[in-house]
Structure formats: C-alpha cells, structure tokens
Image 1 (cartoon, rainbow, N blue to C red):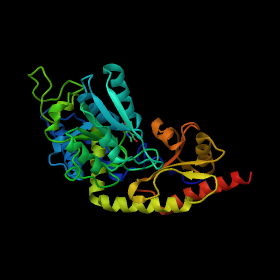
Image 2 (image 1 turned 120 degrees about the vertical axis):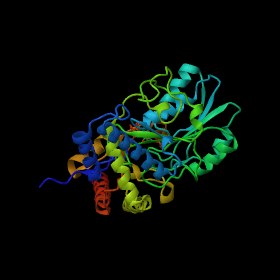
Image 3 (image 1 turned 45 degrees about the vertical axis):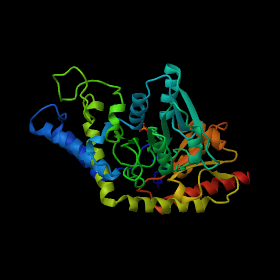
Image 4 (image 1 turned 60 degrees about the horizontal axis):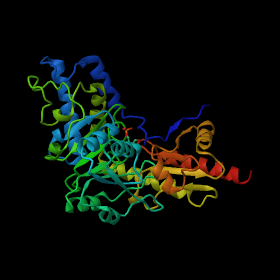
Length: 392
Ligand SMILES: Cc1ncc(COP(=O)(O)O)c(C=O)c1O
C-alpha cells in the first residue's frame, strides 16, 4: 500500500485548500469568465462583485475600516515591492529592517541601495530568531524613512512584537511596514489595535486562496505617500492621462487575476466562518505536539522559540550528519513527508541561527488541515532518522 503523502510546506503555499475554493474558481471559469470594471453586462458586473466581496472579507478579517484599503496584488512579494519602492524615492533615506527578513524585503532594499544609495540597518535577532524592539528605537536616525519588519519568520516561526514596534514607529512618525506572509490567516491581526501603515500578505498561504493572489493593506490617508509602480488601465476615469488617484485604482493597473481572486474570496470566507481563534488554537496544539515530541532527541535540533506565544507553526530542523537536501529526500522517500530544505529565501536568518554554512535546514510548516496524528508521525520520523544515524 502506498503511504499517504503528508504536505508540510504550507509556508511556501497552503495545500490542500477548502473545497469551496475549487468550487468558486470553477464557477468563475465556467459561468463568468469576464474581466471586472470593463463592461456593463451581467458577467462583468458579477466579476466586479467577486473582487469587492474579497476586499470586504479581507478588510473584515483585518479590522480595516474601508475595503478600498486592500490592494489586490499577485503575491506577497508584489505588495512588499510596492510598499518599499513606492515609498522610498530619495537617496538620503535610512531604513530599519531585521536580519530575519525574506528576500522579498532584503532584495528590494539591496536594489535601492544600489540604485539610490540609501542606507539600511539590519537589527540582529537572539538565538531563537526574536528581535528586541528597543534595538529598533536605538537605530532610528533623523533621516529614517521606513521600518520594515517580518511578523512571523518563514525559517523558524519566531514572531516579532509588532505592537511595540508600531508604538515606536508612531512616536517617531516613521512609516511602518509589516511583512505578514506567515501570520495573516494563522492568527488574528487587527489594524485598529496595531497601527501599521502598510501590511503585505499573500492570498495563497494561510488565506487559503490559489497561487497568484496577495494583497497590501494601506492605512487610509497613507496612500498619498506611495507612488504607484505600475500605470495602466483601470476601467475608471479613462478620459484622463494619469493614473486615478483614488483607491484601489491608484495601485491596481491592468486586468485582475479574477479566477485567483474568486478562489481567495472563498478561502477568506472559510476563515471567517471557522474563526481565526479556532484556527490558531488548532495550530497551537500542533506546535505543542511537534515541540514536545522532538525535545531532547540526540543529534536533532529544532530552531526557533520554545514559547508557543512567540511563534507560528514553522519549524526548521537539522539532524547531525545530514545535509538539508539529503534529509528532505529521506523524509519524502521513506516517510512520504513533504518538506522544504535549503535557505528558504532568508539567508541572514540562517546566518543568525548558525545554519547558513551547512546550506540551511529542513522546514516543516503547518496548515489548518494537518492533524495531531500527522504531526506525531512527522516527529517520530525525525526521531527514527536521528536514532538510526546515531548508532550507525
Ligand atoms: C516571510 C515571507 N515574506 C514574503 C514571502 C513572499 O511571498 P510570495 O511567495 O507570496 O511572494 C514569503 C514567501 O514564502 C515569506 O515567507
């Protein structure tokens, strides 16, 4: 009998999706097919309603006061690029970020360093991948124009204290951008409680939509500080040569990924119905299970916080004597466990955790449809491999 393949790569993209996601995409593909805002016939209007509904639902999930503050993007990278490059246009700019960032923050910043000569400060993390918000306060200079922070690490699951950092940013009137790729949809984030200026997130990870979807939340009023990176058709104000200045059209040039947004709309509906507190409670139980079953196993190291309140369900592991690629292959071939080896597009985070030189680690990342038994099975597989290696 072939073993069930168990997907532990939800930090890359979530799988499986709730059935309603497939149904919504099929309905769009079979019955609608039209582009939004480009016609007055019934199907075009219905396409527009799908986008509005997705915007409203995402706004509801985040506690955002107006749906237009949700800008549809094609992934999280797309939203982060708009936030960073749309805001930073002057050479005399200093930006504060952390060593825990994904390349989708690190690379736009490196590009701006090269193109404009901006300065970047990278705040270090402790051994569990957490930064001290006070280090951010200390790094602020007169010309600091942005604080850009990843909320949940895609390497070791550590969460940064974005509430404290947002207070510091507010006190110094510095724009605050959060990369919430690994947290939106996993737990509740309310932009009324945590005043961020911009929050970027994918639609295809914990929001349970398909690949090719994402969004950027922009605090009402902040949009005037952001330059669009793309100009083009919006189906609105076609008589004027410039990009419309109102939301969301200012930042949504060109036809939408409507089949993707139809799926995203259904994914967010699923989360609203389940409730993020329930989703988080399930993930916390899975995290506890993984941590307790992998504790004190000779040769096995699990990176990131032991304290569940400081983490999401992303675990990097190493086993002495194994290269990450080799370990992931054993996990797949012998145990049907699908994991992600390597540097996870976050080289400085791996440097900080001490795993860069060995080529990174193997990542297990949780999703809402995994069970406690799946996680126990994965932890037992790791124990078995570590034990067999130790007696080899
Ligand atoms: C922390 C973090 N930021 C940004 C991204 C980029 O997301 P996307 O693949 O949707 O562009 C990822 C993707 O893995 C991520 O983990």
